[in-house]
Image (cartoon, rainbow, N blue to C red; front, side, top):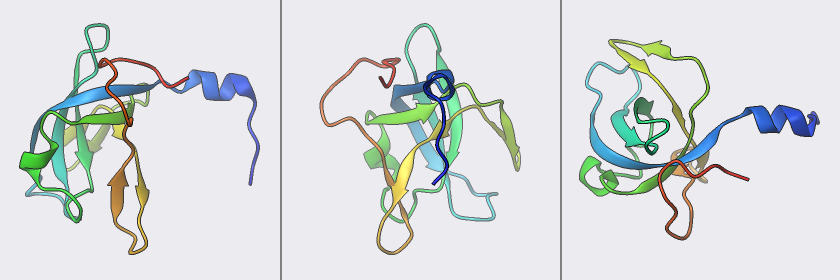
Length: 112
């Protein structure tokens, strides 16, 4: 495993957001959802493509807290511009399970 300096970690903006909307990303090559996530007043609402269809339905994602990286440059994914990276872990079958806080925190809160 490669080690990094503390200042490298400090540069990554990992924030909590609340999912406002989730819809199937019909044009995606790999099954995915388009999420609109509110990261609080200072950052605002960001769009992301998330490959989480195996473990979640769109309607159960709305109003959930998620953890995202908000300072990567936007990335074109098919017809959408992904503006953040929603984080997760692979389960035993290789499907993504969301990384989420275990208690309520305000949108925009930064991972410390």
